[in-house]
Image 1 (cartoon, chains in turn purple, orange):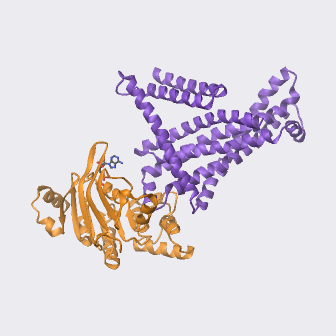
Image 2: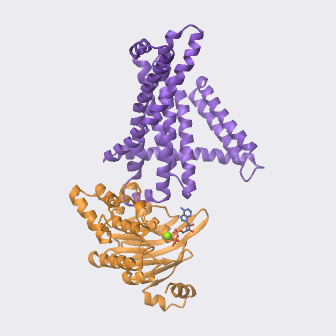
Image 3: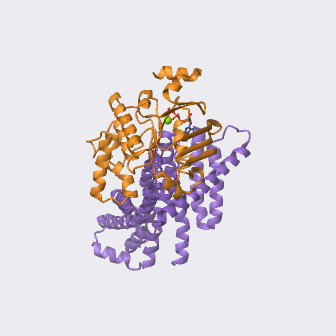
Length: 310
Length: 249
Ligand SMILES: Nc1ncnc2c1ncn2[C@@H]1O[C@H](COP(=O)(O)OP(=O)(O)OP(=O)(O)O)[C@@H](O)[C@H]1O
Ligand SMILES: [Mg+2]
C-alpha cells in the first residue's frame, strides 16, 4: 500500500518535473531525464525477482524501454509505408473520422465550455483585484486559443480515443482478427492503423476549434452573468490584439497531438498479447502513454512556437 | 498450379518452432500433392494451429523450410507473401470474423480488395458463398449475434471467397451439429473433386476426416507419429495411435 502511494507520488513528481524541466531544458536533456525517470519508476514498481541486484533490474528496465522505442520505430516505418502506397482506404478513413471526430464532439465541446467558464470566473476575480477587468475578454480568448483549447482537446482525446483504439485493436489482436486480415493478404497497418492515425491527425484541429469556440462562448456567458456585455463587444475586445500567429500555430500543433494519440494507441493495441487481461493492459497503457507524450510534446511545441512565431 | 514443386504445392521440411524455450514443433516433414486433402490429427496443444499459421507466415519458424506454391515462405517479403496468401483460403479455429462488420461484409471484405467485381456481382458472389455453407439468412447480422457454429461457417465462406488453390482449415467441423458437420465435410470433399484443391484440414472428427481426407497425419510431441490412409492407421500397432483412434471411434 505504502509502495503504491510512493509510486503514484513519484510519477506525479516525474510529470511535474518534466513540465518544469521542459520549460528550461533543451528537448534532448528533457528526453534523457524522462528515460531515467521512467526507468526509476518502473524499477520501483517492479522490484523484480532479483531485489538483491538492482543493477540487473535497472538494466532490464532500460533494455525493455529501448526495445519499446525500437519496436515503435519499426511500427512507424510500416505505418508510413502502408499509408503512402495506394490504394487508399477512403471509406474506412471516413468511418474513422466519424468515430474519432463527430462522436467526440460533445465531450470536447463540454470540456472546452467548462474551461471557458472556469477561466472567466477565476480571472475576473484576479483582474478585478488589479483593476484590470477590461482585459477579461482578451485574457479568456488568448488563453483559450493559445493553450487551454489545444491541450484540453489533446488530453480529453487521449482519454477517449486512446482508450477506444487501444481496446478495439487489442481485442481484434487477441481474437485473431488481425491475423485473419493478414491471412487474406490485407495489410492491417493500412486498413486499421493508418486510417485511425489519419483520422486523429485530421480531426484534432477541428475539435480544437470546437473547444475554443465553446470555451469563448461559455466565457462570455459566465462573465456576462456578473457584468452583462453583448457578445459582439466581448468578441471585439477579445480579438482586438489577436493576430493569426496567436491562433494558427497553436491550432495546427494539435495535428501532432493527433499523430501521437493515434500512433501510440494503434501501436499498443496491435502488440497486445495475453487475452482479455492483455486488452485491459494495452488500453490503460495507451491512455497513459498518449497523455504523457501529449503533455511532453506540448511543452516542446509551446517553446518552438514562441521561438518561430513570436 | 504451374509453380508448385513437382506437383507438391505444400512442402515442409524439418520445421521447428518453440515458444520461450518450450518446443512445440520438433522437425516436421510433410508434403501434400496437388488435389490431395490431408487431415491433421493430434491431441489438444500439440501445435496443429501453430503449424497452420507457420504455413502462411503468420508466425516465423525457428528453423526449417516451408514451401507453398513453390515459394519459400519464411524468406518472402510482405508483397510476395501476400501474393501467395491470396491463393490460400485460411479458416481460423475461432473463425476470427471481423466483429465490426456484418456477416455479408465479412465475406465481401477480401472480394472488395482483391477483385474487380462490381457491387452487384460482389453481392451475388457473397450470397452464393454463404449459401454453399448453408447460411441463407441472418446475412445482415453482426458476428456477435450469430451462434458459434454459424460463425465457423461464415469463416469458411470467407476463406473460399477468393477461389483459393490451397485450403488450410483449422477444425472446420468442431462445434457444429452432426448434420451440419457432415454437410461441411461433404463441401470440402466436393471442392476437392470439382477444383482439385489441395488442403490441410485440422480436425478431431474422424468421421468427417473419413469423408474428405485422402491421407491422415497424426501429430504427437512435436513430431508426426504416423501418416497414411485410415485403414493403414487402424492397422498400426503403435501404442499412441491405437489409443488415439480407439478413443476417437
Ligand atoms: N503465441 C504463443 N505464445 C506462446 N505459446 C504458444 C503460442 N501459440 C501457441 N502456443 C503454445 O503452443 C502449443 C500448441 O498450440 P496450438 O494452438 O497449436 O495447439 P493445437 O494443437 O491447435 O490444440 P487444439 O487442438 O486445442 O486447438 C500450446 O502448448 C501453446 O501453449
Ligand atoms: Mg488449435
